[in-house]
Amino acid sequence: MARSAASIRIRLLRIVLVCAVLVGATIVAAIPAGATAAPAPSGISAAASTDNATLGGGDAVPDVLVAAGSRFRLTVTLTPAGATFKTDTKLSLTASLASGAHPGGSLSPTSVVMPGGVNTAQFTVSYSAVDNGVQVTVSVAKATGKIRPVTPGTTAPFDVLKTLEIFPFTDPSIRVGRGVGDADCTQDTTESECGVVILPNGISSQDGALSLGACTSDLGCTAGSQVVQFIADLANDYSPTNPATLIIRCSKALCRGKGVASYTLKVSFSATGPLDLVSAPCTNKGVALDAAGNTFCTDYRRSHRDNAGDLLLFLLFVHDVRGSI
Picture 1 (cartoon, one colour):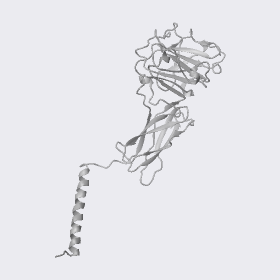
Picture 2 (picture 1 turned 180 degrees about the horizontal axis):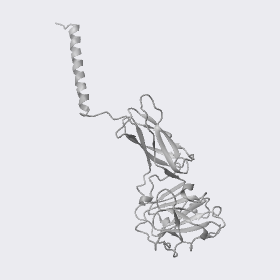
Picture 3 (picture 1 turned 90 degrees about the vertical axis):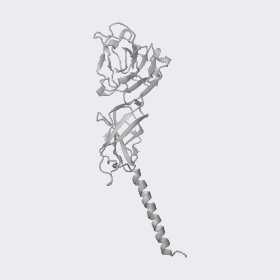
Picture 4 (picture 1 turned 30 degrees about the vertical axis):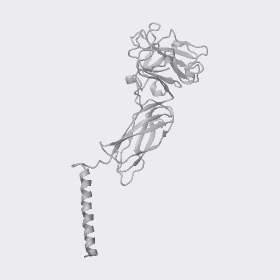
């Protein structure tokens, strides 16, 4: 006997209910017992960095070693721990200088998207100008009624360089002289200040770097000059009696008129910050020792002006160094 339409509807309804119960049981089983939803973010933590794994030099390698227009890594982490946005959220990026001066460049991009459900994400960013003490602030682009206020996060200050050259430890030019800057810091250069490093014993196993950066008033260098930086691991290759040499070339226009010995180099052995040490005269030609026993000094016996009038000061040293007139 044929079933009535009513009985068929009742049977189908029972089947649908059973399936719904089974699906519901599957969803519940997929959520761990005792699990709680991720907290909503109340703040942002931001950090800038570059991959410096190939470089030797230890403490002399800054977290961010980058030239203007080149990419660095920006890591964004939401706080408190484990916090996430429920949906993809646009974040604004703004640049400032630790000195309070107006930034000379801009960031690219100026915004990124933080994926929903993610606590930490990394983005690639660049800054367009040569500046010291650059900071990147990350903030929620536009607060809505669904997102409570989130405190912006700012990176630690970092320097953006004019020129950055990373060279392999096998590079033969470093034994006779490798320059950084226009025309490799030869007599034909247009740089106000630049440098040539001479490493007669080469360097072991890891790469090295040479850079030119801005001279700002907080560093203690002469206005109009530039900061020359050399990074490499020299620990096992050099000593005071067998030092490395950094020849600082100062243009005739910047270092005009005075005798060679009237100029001094300001140096630092840290990755960033002021050039807070004065390179005193070497006690002996070719030996990296001054009268106080420091293992860096200016060899005035070899320092001179070339036939174009540029000043060449010979800095002898045994580990990473930053220096300027």
